[in-house]
Image (cartoon, rainbow, N blue to C red; front, side, top):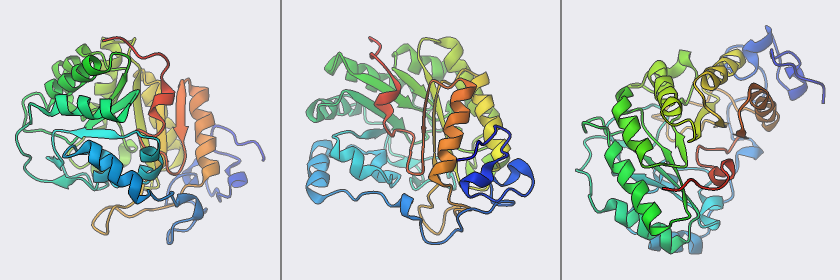
Length: 319
């Protein structure tokens, strides 16, 4: 394959028609590549079998997983491996992001027994690495930070050698809420930017790009020993230089773990896919990210924030 330089030149080698250098690499306005329509072959995930689904659902009981609520394409692979990402604080979100399949509305009150039930399910599943995420709970004074912390501590108490990654909302930029989560000593602190600055308002309606960056910066500065992580969805109309600049922004605030994946439209009511990004392009972006100094990068069409999450860390931190 012909060398592809960091400025985006040479991307013709990946099957992308470059009209004006970087503009067409990952965006919809100037690019060639794979036309939007039927999903390409590389987007077809292996289906979960009913025996695996029934077994996992039997263990999880009434607990929510982002695997189901967000219709993750890797549900089959991850559940076959006996792993899952717990979605705490209910399955109703106070925000209405235009890419997300999670329901929007008025959530139920927090369940004080949920941390114990999450830990119990993790024990029954024999997990070594647990990912905890949540809906946005903007109606709560701390955005649910104390509930995150309670779940982390319950997991460490039940499984002393477990590693715990948290994927948090932005807590409206509250430093106190970020500190509350970090005081529970998660192994990884994750908050996703999801998309480039230009598209943030359209994609993440109630979010702000600068506020999300601040959350990542605060987490890194408060606890440099806890790796920070973020991720992007591609195929929403972003351009290659915007992607690269967003990765630079992440590195400037201390992010060391990165995920890049293809956006999938959950329903006709959500944002459309502007472009299918090829596996070669994801590989090219992974190389660029590693050159920028990211320590671990998962980059591919079916990659999601929790995909192979356990591979990004070494020995888990002690509680």
